[in-house]
Figure 1 (spheres, each protein chain N blue to C red):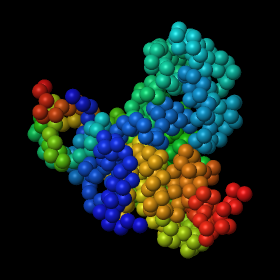
Figure 2 (cartoon, each protein chain N blue to C red):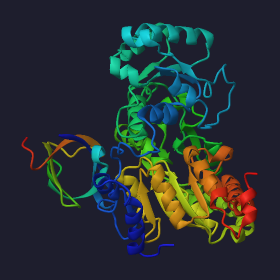
Figure 3 (tube, rainbow over the protein chains, first blue to last red):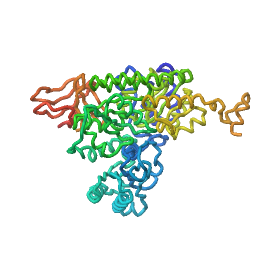
Figure 4 (cartoon, helix red, strand yellow):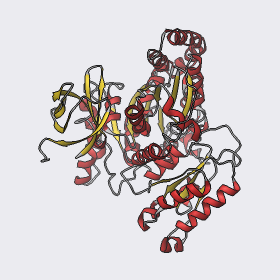
Length: 491
Length: 73
């Protein structure tokens, strides 16, 4: 394993060697050894740039960022994938943002609504179809609280005026219809989709209930940027409620339109996913004077630290309760660490996830005695890397917008015991005989947030890393003469 | 011209340029008094921007338009 910066740099140079010179020059800026002494990531690593044509990037598109990430989890609205059927259908329910409610009656999270564009809609425009779709959906699902129209690529290309449709339908249906211009071709990754979605929320959701009476308390907070994946927001919410806060809104996991509209009345915004929701937090800070803070509920050390930091923003009763909660849960998580740390200590992890987890889960792995030897983001910006450098050791490998080839090569050379990334990467590494966990969807498990989530996290990591299968798995063509039993793996 | 947000933290004024994810401490603001606020901004990383001079100190954070000092108004 590389320990010095020079060694890490040598490894990077070797892996990038296969690229043509121009591509190598571009990619070299996105891969770097970590330098925790830097305050700013500028000069260390470049991020949020267009992916190189020809390399297999893992990134998504603006539609994915808006419909999939930010809007999709709002459960009592219908989110229309406006355009051809595939974008909505192939991403349907894949993100596992849980909600309570009866699907198809008052909640619509896992359903796919699409205008199913055909050739004639591209030629003649799809606005009339959209009007009809909205009317029909409203008739079929009378309990729906509103609609969002999530544009797919053709909408922008053919120049449909979905804003006009939205304005008219808002009046006709008596429910908010919000046009979101998140065509997939916008921007370099899903990150711009987050921004566009935030702007649409700012313009059409926030402020709708500003004149309405709403009984407030001094302890009102909103959870921002928690998408309730596998129930994450729930295991976070109970902690906040136990320390005496009142969670008014969840953005947007298990969230409703009404609670999001009432967020302007809270006293503090708690931001978990900085990348996808810092925009709206900054806006509320300016317009409604609601301060915001980032927190991290992965692993007991970070959860305790965050609970104390959150409590410090309130009075002494909250602070006392926070200490009480921390003391009480210690009895719950200490046995988890006692059980799994001996099994996981010293194991090495490589992470390649979205815009938040590569840095947020580091503490949770460290609580289990594991070491993060490589980390990277698909679509982070330089402010995310600013926040990451300090959390990683000197000379840790950093890779931004890594290609499938780069990830494979890095894993071959650094030989981690566990790789955490998404579904597209999962089976490549399984076939290489490396333990893998999906860190986007928690591999159909979860929640991982909070103290309750940590027990599940620890169990899952142990299950993956210490499964006996990895020692048995070797591709038949790699089996050499002195290991004949490996040759029968594929029968 | 770019949209920026100026806010305040424990160390003083902070300059945020969303387009570039540039969040830097402001080391010097040309006019920073109750009746005159704005002008040339100097950042921790050495870059310089200019905002319009306001008649009164605004409530922070505030969204403003800024240009690089090298650009003409």
